[in-house]
Figure: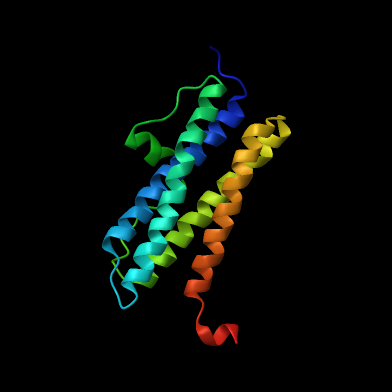
Length: 154
């Protein structure tokens, strides 16, 4: 099978890599979070990484539908992702800020992939990406709200 629409395949590979790397980053935060609000953040991070993980297989399957082999090795994901890998410690707010940066990087790539899918009339893929954009915007909003000082919102 010949690869169809290589520009979309490349965009999906980046989104897939972002999802894999970000889900592992958030799961690590879930495991290692510390602080007075541990239980709240532990559950919150779990919701995020479970959501991110649920996107991995559909993104990979869309790549296969277009005739591409899917990246599946850690070095491939690390090469393709826009999500930074840095040490931030274990405190709730530090982890939240790091996850927010990753969510925003992935959101930029999802937006580009959506435009590509839409331009190529791949509506099924565009719909999947639109759902991912919506969830990333939700996580972005919730993380931003978490990091905003209370006095700023009053």
